Image (cartoon, rainbow, N blue to C red; front, side, top):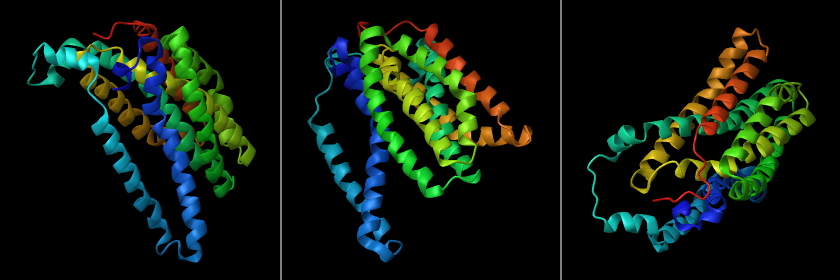
Length: 289
């Protein structure tokens, strides 16, 4: 919706608002939980923890109103006017756009692996290594602010120099910082985790996060954009975010508690994402139809 409504020169920035829901949600969730804990005090475990869930109903209502008020996109209306109908869009995508699905999935998996490494596994291993749990969680929440800022900046940058350049640059940066970040996350100090989360979650993930929505959407024609982008993006979410913590835990066991195999895994995933982007046509300025 954002990509097809936006002018060609600002598609990356427009699409970034969808992705910005991740760090924005983390920030709002943390604030809501902190406020509820402060108000309910000793009654937090009795009823205070329920308040953020009740408040989320307001966001659901706002989202429904916005969606009902937004018109279908010009690109979709042109497709609709042509009278084309398909019974099984999924098969059409797999038949005609399978390469775009695979490349989009590889590129997006790199982002999700970074997210899982820093905000899921990284939090767990930092606490297990001796860092203060409350401090780790507070730093994680603060890093989400940086992720949000970098997300919008990198998306706007991709409107100027191209999605591919930004994504490849972020992948190279992530690969170069992989081992330093692993050492920082596992050294058992709060400052170590703080530096790692700023580098990994704030910078690397932020630069990957900003352009990725427009990058994926621009790889598909209007008739297959929704289905194709969903396959690539949600498939990457399942593989990258879902399996990474389990994979890195297994690699740590194989390495006798070390992190060198985890570093290899992280670098390989980022390299695969960079290669996928490299062989993908640049979407900036492309005619969406």
